Amino acid sequence: GARDSKQSDRGFVSFRGAMALFSTNHLNENHILNSSHVHIGGYYNFPNLWDGLADLLTKLRRRNITTSLNPQWDASGLWSGLDSLYCLLEFVIINQDEAFHLTKHNVLSDALLFLHNKGLKMAVVTIGSRGAVASIACDEKDSKTLWFWAKAKKVKPVDTTGGGDAFSGGFLHYWTKTRNVSVALRNGCALGTAMVTKLGASVEVTAQGGGAF
Image 1 (spheres, rainbow, N blue to C red):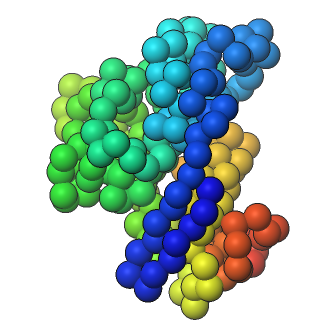
Image 2 (image 1 turned 180 degrees about the vertical axis):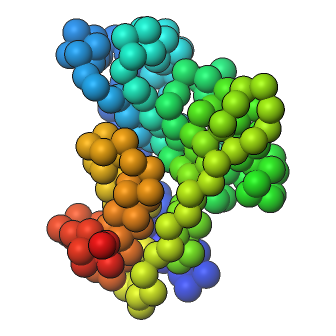
């Protein structure tokens, strides 16, 4: 894809290619069902994956395999299709704008409560230079939630492309390794922060470079 940059915002022009055809039929289910965690990245970029995804997530849940999802930006503007999947996921990783679009709420606490009411156990939300939060539903019978927050180190951004992906990769690595939300948030923020100090989205960064401790 090509990127058009302006001071106020970014625009991307991309072609889905094989992603538009990819479905659960292309997956090696035996390998997936022997995983400890399965992450679905870029949900809205894989329209042929949608129909079989609920069945796959159900199978994974029955085997106590944890799952997570990142929707990616919905270019159609509909932001639909996920309501029936939230109860099958351990968590989603989204940014604040995605949270608002998915829930039709423009206050973060309201947006997260909406997701929990749909059955989602944990929502991980990046909030730009302020870092990231994770909200965990404590009890299905009430609206109590437990919040975790990790601050991002203050840096001078060079290129924000890939910052969210770096956060997601860091969070997933440390969460699957430790099952500690605070540790995963801190290191996810550190990797995201380190990425935005570099030009381009395919450079190697470390959590230490972004202020992890």
